[in-house]
Image (tube, rainbow, N blue to C red; front, side, top):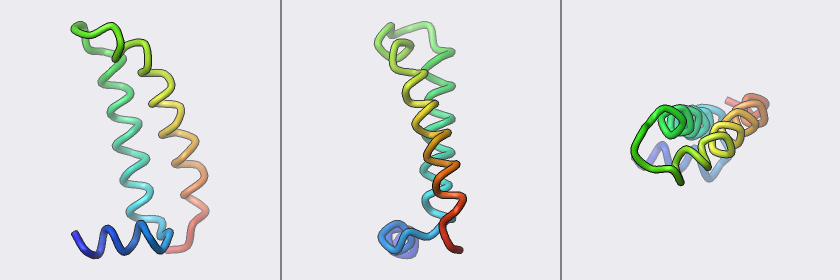
Length: 62
């Protein structure tokens, strides 16, 4: 856990790619669930944020 937080603070690629991937997965889940309309409403924004974030952090150093 400490290495993960250290990687986030030092802007390392691995931890930030994990965060971006989780955001993309969360957005897809929000898009497919049938229970809460607010989740469906914000699913595109969450997925788009994760995708743009992944593109940006893929340029971070290892």
